[in-house]
Length: 57
Image (tube, rainbow, N blue to C red; front, side):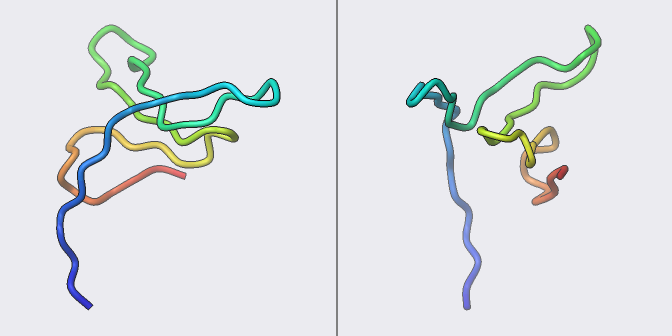
């Protein structure tokens, strides 16, 4: 198996009164980094450094 880089872009769509997508949002505080959250459910989120391969669940 070979791992390579992928590229994504935030997006969202509304279906059945539910928002789906990779949704970008600013951090809670002014100096906090931006997050990209996987919806629905917001059970996985990504933040800087974007190239670390780490995520929050």
